[in-house]
Image (cartoon, rainbow, N blue to C red):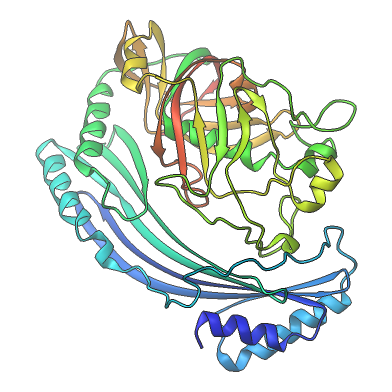
Length: 456
């Protein structure tokens, strides 16, 4: 049974008031390497069926992997029964009415395979050779996935989205394994990955690390490259649910009630937005919700998505909204979108130019193990890893010990003193969950390195 046939058959089998069916067909291909040698490669396929049945205001959701044809009726019956037994859902709304079906709805699913690395693998081999000649070791992995999502509803919605996702994580270590540096990139198809440039960048960082500088905890002027900025802004994005703000449970709650939408968060004209059509990081143009949460609603499946400004010119413009929370807040419906873009003033400098204009400060190349301390201020804690460097008089003079940091990305927006040029990047901490970001490097005053860390 094809995914399209599974959608139609499941809708026919449901006996309740309404039904939403999601079928996700996935495929992945990967390369892993260590010590300048490929170690493994592989491909995998997956399939998941989600049936969302609606009885009055009750909702039953059943998800199963690799459902056979003869199991489909049981899955739908289980969802129907769960809906009939459920308490009324507070986010219950009429299902989204049908618009035009996706033009490629009927096309067959074409999975990714190891061939996606056809041009990339030889370049990786050349990077291994360069690293070997330089006394370095490269470790990491490359992964490409393609997920085709089919959404059908009893109101006639028939939408499909094919999402390619690729990422490369690259670690370089010195021959004695005492110095380490990390970089990573996101890509749709690996045709745009410059492995040689990434290898050269890591070699430079290992050279910087030959000189060791021990610094105490404290507040430092800090340069954060796009990857580290992405990790902080993704956490801000994930924490921007309107329900939590309305309930006074988040940093975006207004004292006395309501949300902080409309409030100026940054003095510099920085913007944070999402756009399903953004070049290089395109994502689904409609809502796909496999379960309801405080930031998503199964009743919103199929809602069209467009560019959304979350922060514009430093001002909070929107929060994550379902139709239900939008009615509570009186604000527009602004569902989550699977990419994130941060920009600053036009003509921003490159990271290299920002280093060159630094009198004394830290360059923190990536963050790690980020966790929330206080949701009402969005205070986060985490560790630096694989490269903290001291910059003096416009030059990197050595590698610094690691730190534990305590910072709120919202508070940090208010202390930005410079925003660089934006480009596509890969977050280090969150790239298992969120890869599509365009971010700038930033300069932050008084970044709080709370303690020295022995982590390496």
